[in-house]
Length: 426
Image 1 (cartoon, rainbow, N blue to C red):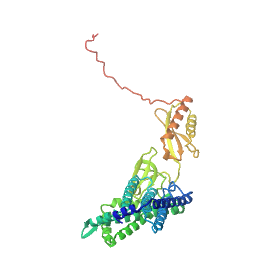
Image 2 (image 1 turned 120 degrees about the vertical axis):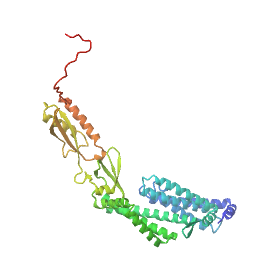
Image 3 (image 1 turned 180 degrees about the horizontal axis):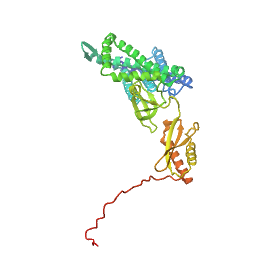
Image 4 (image 1 turned 90 degrees about the vertical axis):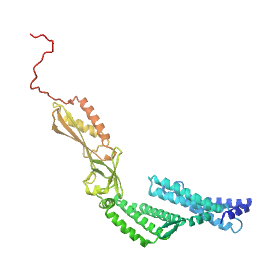
């Protein structure tokens, strides 16, 4: 339908037929909302089908689209249809927007790029809907078909490129949706280990994206046999320029399969100590207790020395040292140190805090307090500081001396005294 047909339909609309279409549209929307409301009562808020409020999921615009199109076909036998035709295009655009938005939010919940993709898809969908409603979409597509681009000996129209991009996008979004569903419904119950679940999820997602991309390219008309040349070039690039990148990807899968380092472990890499928050295919995120996060290439975790503080025991040892005077009672000092550590709620009772006389220092007796915590990711200084304060208060209350550093200066000889100028000589 062109713009003249749209204007002709608009002129044929009467008040009675308009109210019939509006009533049919309201009925279709009410039925779609009721069905979604009934089946979406116990669904999670991150559901792609139902969304957070039932009507912002994918199922509502799809049901409304189906019912509205059926009503349009039925009413079309009796009168000219305009409102229902507009509603069909609106619900179709809304379903496309909801599909992309809900799937990307479920797969990439913390990505800032998702908002940009949503807005871009929304603008394109609504522009296409408006052009189809007013009857200008066929003319725009015909104009895009006349614009051609040269790729070697082949001529490709701009319309073919846009349709291919749209097809590839839809296929990739559906592939991501299937991967996300498998991860939530199958892997979450079948695989209890978080690291193995991560590697299985990454493998399934990569496989489905590859299959989806091949299907999309084939649908557009790209000869897949030509990709063999690209695969050979890619292999050469991986062997030379991309060897570090390939090593990091391979190392990431090795780490996830061997489970030498798992999500949640406390590790120390190149002097940086923290908790493993995520293992990507190329790098691993290590978060320190003070909030700083380090991005460690996976190859470094395979080839370099890494201290995994959580492999053998989840208990984490902390120490603090203090020097008291030589006249102090060693047993009393040990009791004060242990009581100060045991009073903190984060300090474990098994093993219990223990204090040792570790050195006869120049200024006094040096004691070292050992205590254990189970949550080093919450910070270490914030538990060591109150213990030190309690030790200081306990020692002062017991009148135990904490000596200042003392140094003895020995003078072997002094130069002869020279009288100042003008001083009388005797």
